[in-house]
Structures are given as C-alpha cells and as structure tokens.
Picture 1: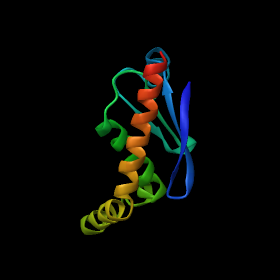
Picture 2: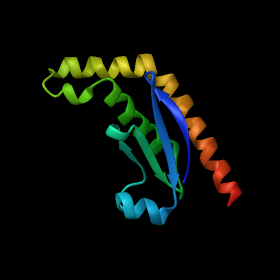
Picture 3: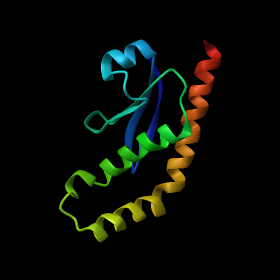
Picture 4: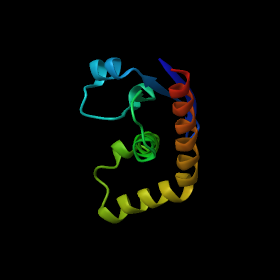
Length: 112
C-alpha cells in the first residue's frame, strides 16, 4: 500500500493506492476510487486512473470538510452557493492536488 498525505481545508487526509485485488476485496470492483470521510481516506486501485476520478474523490473530501452532510435541508439556491464557494475558494487547490496524485500514481506505475 503506497500513498501520500494531503490537506483538505486544513485537515490531514491520506490518499492510498492499493493493488487492484486488495481494493476490490475492501471496496468492491464497481468503482475506481472511494472516499471514506470518517477515516479521512481516499483510496484508488493501482490500475488505470484518470484525473476526472481523482477530482471526483477529492471533491467528496472537500464537501465533507464543508459539512455537506449537514446541508441536506438547505434550499436549492443555498446548495448552489455552497458548490460555488467550494469551486471558487478551493477549485485551484483541488486541481493542484489531483495533479500531484497523478504524479505519485505514475511514479508507482514506473516502479513496478
């Protein structure tokens, strides 16, 4: 299991790269990444990984740190404002972190 540490809105999260076999055993074979907010963990299988999937999983982490789980009773315009705040304040960081994760992933693939 290889990985790296990142910060999401000031909180330490771990990004893990697991063998495809271990990932499928732990999380199933119907996804290409998973975010576990309670553990502050984002995990990916060591197979073909793309920027879109990484950004998707990072966004789950950011929404959790913004307490999205408590926002279910927000009105539509309030939810929209929350998404706009996320992208406006953290969009660039999400992209930078995603590119860092791609770099780590590519380095691991080269080591195989």
